[in-house]
Image (cartoon, rainbow, N blue to C red; front, side):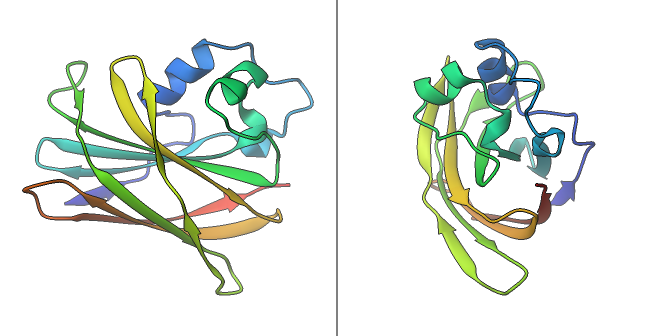
Length: 158
């Protein structure tokens, strides 16, 4: 298993689909709220975890999926796919997520399924007091497969 941390410009496919459904965020939106993605590859299974401040979401998308917008609200979007690129399919999993701030406070992030077309992802939100650095820990479980664990840090801007 390896974890690759690509440039912040690379987005999870579902996030692109969500963004395409709505107008761009208002010009006053915080540029530091841009999505940041971590990737875990295990065999032909890919886990993509995207973290962003919900102020970067358009109003219609946030409303459609019941996500409150704000610089102080961080969204974690996790997609698990199997198969070759451009032919990937969603993999049914259970995602458990926590974030730890620099003071050592550990926060559970309740995750729920999010349907985006034929794809299913998991989304959760966490209220923070920016600027903040969070250490994320994900536990991804799939029936009949070994658990996958992911750890990464993200800076949350003001």
